[in-house]
Length: 318
Image 1 (cartoon, helix red, strand yellow):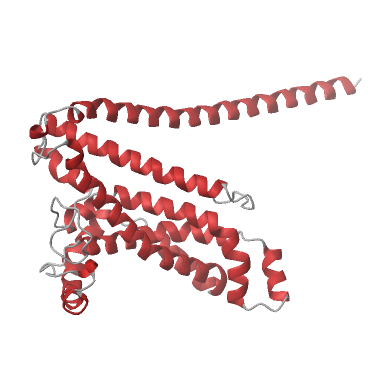
Image 2 (cartoon, helix red, strand yellow):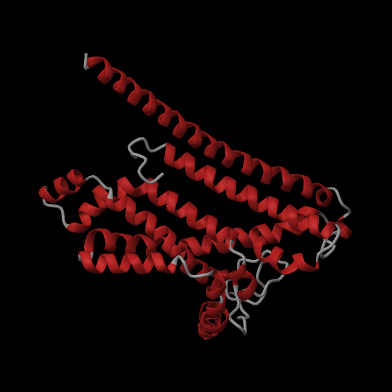
């Protein structure tokens, strides 16, 4: 007699579990579709608003360039150039900090340092901009003058040096400081998840601590480091306030790091010119936003292809 109620309770429990599973599945599916719809809506908006600038008379565009592509080329170059410089400086530092936290520092120091790194990521970009223009630029200006005087034969440091220090290199340094917490946090989590058995096997075979890291930790964490780099690069590509506050821009395509003629960035150009723009000028700025959108998608697509080619990666960070 008691088996019937128990069987009914089990069936009711199983039915309730299936209902919860289906509700969770539907909510997760809805969240995924919402991301795709939002991305598609942004792309459609950018394309529609960009069409008037793409087919407009070049004389109606800001600066009266020879064509729309002549207008956007310095902006795209400056955006990618500043972000790449920032990534070159930030990536080695971030990996070093992440390795120190995960494998070298005592537990108490590692927890404090990790907290500081996470706290640095919460600093508003306008604060970094103020630091860059008020502290960093005057501090590095004499160094730029020394570089142009002693290494001016290298095209990157061709004279004359900027008198204010507000150059593309200064912007890249500030951007590097901003993306270090992002890259460090992800790399730290990836290094911590490296297989313990592989590390112990390397040490048992007589490897030093660095040899163990080089042979067991870094190969496992390479896809995660790539993902972290692309996230940091995306942050640098889209940064607005730092570029608008620190950089002294000019409409040029220039590789010189210490001069006063610096290529602008898309985000900084939009922030500086959008309030006064009107007519086709607004569409031109939105069209540059579309270019930045495409660049960001391309960067992330390339990163995903690189990660997918590494079959030994478990997917913990990617």
